[in-house]
Amino acid sequence: MRERIRQIMENENLTPAKFADKLQINRANISHILNGRNNPSLDVVARILSEMPYINSEWLINGTGEMYKRGFDVNSIPLEHDLFHQSPAPSHQEELRVEKKEASEVIEAEKRTQPVETKSVVVNENREKKISQIIIYYNDNTFETFLPQSAK
Image (cartoon, rainbow, N blue to C red):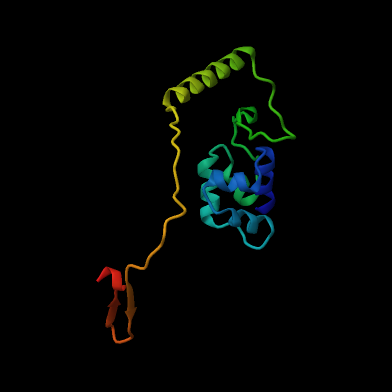
């Protein structure tokens, strides 16, 4: 079954991480399955068949029959894009739609921005520091407070 899972990932151009994310399972589970450390659990098989209802369950579980259910158009699978499997260039209309959307997002962001106020802060570093009190805590939960002569 490991090789069939690998074949699904390859056909749909999914990395192990993207495949795990698509199935909403821990990425380590997929890694362990692909490395042969673990066999796929019933939960993993159920999630594959739930998230990819076009996969033939007989093929996934037993390796018999075709990978995709009868009548399924393989070209209708939305592939994940990567550097090696680029999608065709978008149409001119699609480019215009994206540019218009980006422009409206920029305008909305500009509306949300607020002017920046600049204020200068004056730090007086020549302040003379004087002790106002000293508190000593003892291990029997008592304490004493000492005040300088000028504060008494």
